[in-house]
Image (cartoon, rainbow, N blue to C red; front, side):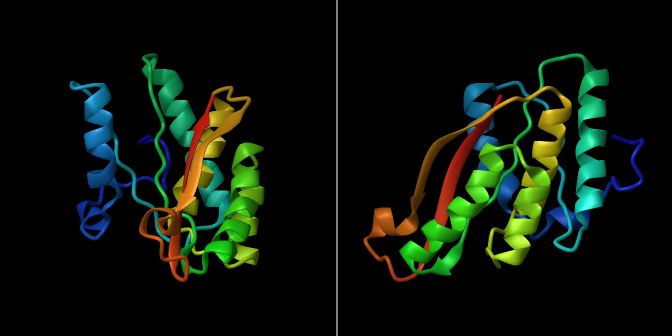
Length: 163
């Protein structure tokens, strides 16, 4: 990863980012002794930079020669009505299921989907494809309304596995 000029060590980038503290307990549940490389991305990053990053990640993984899992974290739509969230979220989910990184990036921008982690998801798709991924599966989709009963302002969530 040190080969890419896009990747620099920056502890400050992690100060206001909470996704790692959400992911780590799940990762450690399945594997107690695990090493991680957390990566935070700017919101204002081009598709070309995300593609370059994805390729750098896949290159680093190939050189590592041990089993590696790529984890990208994002919520889907934020604070919209349930049906709006589902409609918008499934536009993005369709692109993820088709392993269409550029399509995901463009769809989120064009449809104004408030998906906070589409950038790492885009790079993860690029890296996964570079490593030979052929399919993605939707594990589950729901909104906060499915749990709270409040369907007026929801956040969407999707679990997707890429192989």
